[in-house]
Amino acid sequence: MSADTDARATRRVVLGRIAGVFGVQGWVKVFSETEPRDGILRYSPWTVGEASQPLRVLEGRAHGKGVVARIEGCNDRDQAALLVDREIAVTRDRLPPPSVDEFYWIDLEGLPVETLSGTQLGRVSHLFSTGSNDVLVVIGDRERLLPFVWNEVIRSVDFDRPLIQVDWDPDF
Image (cartoon, rainbow, N blue to C red; front, side, top):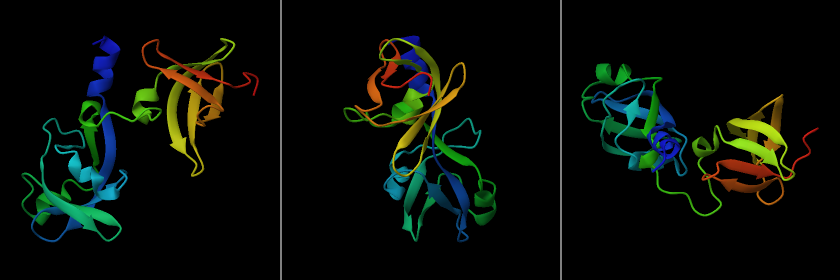
């Protein structure tokens, strides 16, 4: 395993955040960025905020438009309140492998991007969703926003090289 692969495996992946307290027995309301929203419960243990010790999810369920969970060591409303507004993360190696031609955004961040003719455009800074498609933000000599449309714009993603090849006019 290469150093880059090791670094990717241990990177924190934010899956949601603690949005509030739920009841008086230490349960928390969770804003989940997973699909389905209660999928966040499958990724125990969580790292909450900057905590060094992962916290086990003891139980949880979908509730209204969100999720509620009971976390190990959080036994009352006051303890739950201390976690509000903190990110919920797991290490990348806790996530299942993506399907063919599917990628976790965190795996794409930092990869160099070049056109089919070999022109270097920069590196992936981050991605965001527009609703119709995801967008790569590539920082090089300037910032470029490239739609993540497989086979039209994104032609290949090679983690071994590492490189993303795109069909894109470098002047655009």
